[in-house]
Length: 170
Image 1 (tube, rainbow, N blue to C red):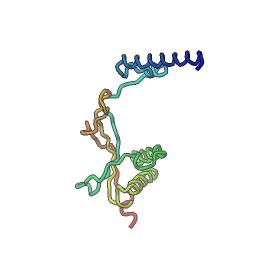
Image 2 (image 1 turned 45 degrees about the vertical axis):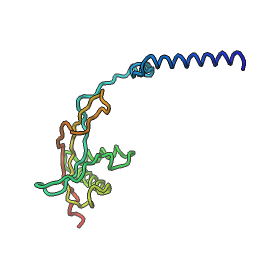
Image 3 (image 1 turned 90 degrees about the vertical axis):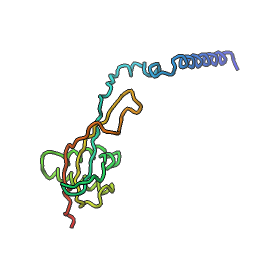
């Protein structure tokens, strides 16, 4: 080994020792981690989450208006493959649009077909009601995990529709 190689090896050892001592002295605290002090991260304005976090899901109900029972709760992301998530969002939004029209009915029928394909309901013509439920969960940025899934803070109905294909396939 030449003298210059020994010198480079000695510098690498000193640098590694300095890194180990620095990490040991910092107590492995997240606030001392060097990545957080990089200028590109220092420019980001990160806002802590609020006290609650809202999640929307589809609730599928079976039965008539007086006695309904919940069949399932489905997130729109589970109805399609990941690459088509934007499409699922548009279809669900269209199915619950306020303006009546052929597009809304087509989107509602498509949501029911997706539920049938997923196995949530038995057949496209099942007499079900589909609702959008918004569930608010408790959020605490300092906790691990940051979301408390049970029990929900609040849950309310956003919109609902009856299966437009019910009785049509007879």
